[in-house]
Length: 235
Image: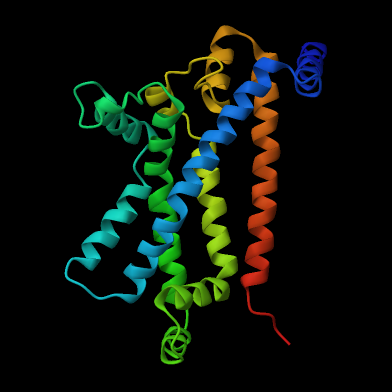
C-alpha cells in the first residue's frame, strides 16, 4: 500500500512537472475564472462596504444582515440560483452563459461579493472617521478620500481579498452546476478532483490537490503576515 501511494505521488508530480496539457488546462481554468470573478467584484464590493460603514440610511441594518447571511449560504445553493438565472427560461437566459466560463464567473462573483463587502465594511468601521473628515475638509474628492482610507486599511483589505479568493477557488458546488465540468472549457480544480476520484484516477486528483494545498499554504502565510502587520506593535 505504501509503494502504491508512493507511486501515485510520483505520477502526480510527473503530471505537474511534465506540463501535462489536461492537468494544466484544469489549473488554468480555475485561476482564470476565479481571478476574473475577484477582479470584477472587488471595486464595487469595497465601495458598498465603505457606504455601509459610513453612510446612514433607512434599511442599512437590513442590508448588513443580508450580506452577512449570504456569506453562510452553501455554494451549491448559490449555484442553483445562478443556474436558474442562466437557464433558457431564466431572466439571463438570452446571454447563453450556462456551461461557460462566463457563467462560472457570475456564480463565483455571487460567492465572493458578500465576503468582500462584509470584511471591507468591518475594516472601514474600525478606522478613525477623522481621517475621512480631514481629507474631505482639505478639499479632496470622495474618491480620493476613500483611497486615503484604503491605504490606511491596506492590511485588513488585503486580508479580505485573500479570504474571498480562497473561498471561490476551492468551491465545487457552484462550478459543477453552472459550468457543467466540461473538459478544456469549464473543468476546474475542485470539480476535476471530484470527477477523477470517482473514476479512480487518483494520480491527477492528487496532482490537483497538491496545487490547492500549495495555494492554501501560500494564502495562509499571506494572511498570517498581514495579520501580523495589522496588529499594533508594543514598545
